[in-house]
Length: 396
Image (cartoon, rainbow, N blue to C red; front, side):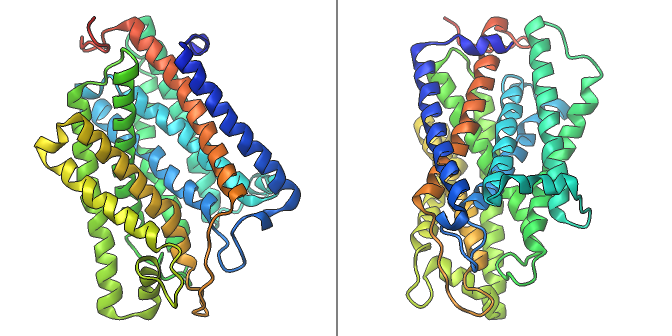
C-alpha cells in the first residue's frame, strides 16, 4: 500500500517538500549540537531537562490518546468511530517515534542510547519506559496496517489480530503512567511530587489527543473527499471537554494543597510560573497564555450550540492542543527545576538551535503522519463504504 503515498496533488507534494525543509534544518542544527555538545541548549546544571523532555512528555500523551478512539470502536462497537479508528492508531505511530527522537537528541551522545539495551537496569523506570514505548509502537503499526489492508481487500480482519488490538488498548495508558512515574518518584522536586501526576497526565492526554484528531478531521474534510463524520467529531469534542474539565480540576487540587498547607516547596514553583519570583518571570506569559486559551476553549467545547459551530469547534480544538502543549511541553518540566533545592532561581529558555532541532523532530513526525494518512485516505476513497455500510467519503 505504500505505493499510494507517491501519488498526490501539487498541494500534497508542496506540503511534503515543506516538511523536508524543516527536517533538513533540524538535522543541520543537530549536527551542530553533536559537534559542540549540549552547551548550545538553554539547559544547565540546575535545569537539566528542557524543551526536548517537555516534548517527549507531551507526545507520549498524544500517542496514548489513540485509545479514546480505538476503545469505543473495538470494545463497545461504537460505529461512528469506524471511519477514524485507523486515523487514531496512525497518530500514535509518529508520536511514539518523536518521543524516541526527543530522548535521542536529549542524550547528547547518540551511543548513550545503546546503554539502555547493553546494560538493562530493571530497577530503573526509564528501562520500563523504553519497553512500553517500543511495544506500543509495534502494536499500532501491526494493528493499523493490517486492519487497513483488510479494509482495502473488502474483508473483515482475521481473528488473530483482535488479541493484539485488545493488548494495544490496555497498553496505551501504561506508556503515559510510566512516564508520570519518572517525575513523581523524585523527592527533591516538589512540583512533581504528587500522587495524582499519572492521573493528570492521562486526563490532559485524553483532552489534547482528541483535539488533534478534530483538527485533522476538519482539515481532511476541507482538502480531501474523506469525511470523518460529524457525529464522530462531536463525540471527540465531548471527550476532550470531559477530560479538560478533569485536567483543570486536578491542577486546582494541587494549588489548594500547596497554598492551604502553606508548604513553601510546593508553593514556590506555582508562584514562579504564574507571578514570578524575585523578578524572574520568563514563564509567566506562557502560563497565562495557557490559562487564557483554556478559558476560551472550555466553554466552546461544553456548550452544545458553540460546539456544533464548525469554526468555533476548530478554534477550541487548536486552543486546547496549544494550551496543553504550553503546560506540559514547557511549564511542567521547567517548573520542577525552578527554584532549585537551594531556593535559588536559575531560569531556562530554549535557544535557537534547540528550537530548530525540536522543530526538525516535529517535522519528522508530521512527515510520517502525512505518509500514513495519505495511504489511509487513499484506501478509504477506494473502499467508499466501511464495514457497517456507512459512507466514508462525501457524496459527489
